[in-house]
Each structure stands twice: as structure tokens, then as C-alpha cells.
Image: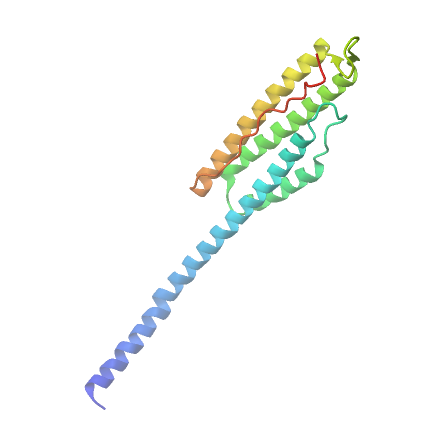
Length: 186
């Protein structure tokens, strides 16, 4: 056996040992970090989906002429499940914004319910068919609802800003105008 064959065998076995003890554990750790990052992004996507479904349910049910505020209990369960998973992945920096956003959604729902109750007490317009006369209480409730909507929108912006910081990317958010249901009022 020549010296070059022995030297080649030593280099090959040394390389194999180096790969086994240095490169493989590093690659395995890197793969695990990438997998955790993917799972974290998936958990955050589920949280976004849950909280935006709750918001959509509220806004779709905010037509004041339809009695009763929409129920969002199912959507809130989804938010809590997603939030628990986000906490498990160590994204605690987004938790406060999520809880504030959820609180603002609930406040908006309460104001919507109050406005719809006030609308039910409004009297029909004496001269214009299909119109109602708005009471001062209704106008106050409507102003409170508009304020709650703005607070909900601000909380939503803080939520998405927190997500952007957590993920290190800009998260796109569609802006939605305030609901306006005054077509049958004077």
C-alpha cells in the first residue's frame, strides 16, 4: 500500500469525522431553528385569521337596521386558542397588542348593541315614509360607536405593527371605513 493511499484514507476518515461531529449538529440545529420559525409564522397567521374573522363578523353585522349585535363567542375561542399557541412559541411581544385589540372588538360590539337598542326606540318620520326620527340618545350612542370603531382601528394598527416587528417584515393590512347606516334616518 502506498503512502498516498494511506494519506487519502486518513483525509477521508478525518473529513467524515469532522462532518459527523461539527457540521451535522450545526445543520441539525439550523434546520430546527428554521422549522420553529415556520411554526411560529403559522401560529401568527392563525392568530391573524382568528382575530380578523372576529372583526369581519362584527362589521358584517353592524348594519344598524338589523336588530341585535352579532355573536362572536366562537371567534373569541379561536383567538384564545391561537393566542395560547403564539405564547407557546415565545411571541410574548404580540400578546399585549392582541389582548388590546380583542378588548376593543368587544367594546365595539357593546356599543353596537347599545346603538341598535336605541334605534329600536326611534319613531317613524311623520312625513317621509321609511325614515325615522333620530333621538338625542341615539345620536350619542352613534358617536360612541364611531369612537369605539376608531379605537378598534387604532388597536388593530398597533397589533399589525407588533406583528411586523415580531416577524421582521411589513404585514399588509386593508383599511376599512367606518360603517355608516344613516340612509333611513333624518
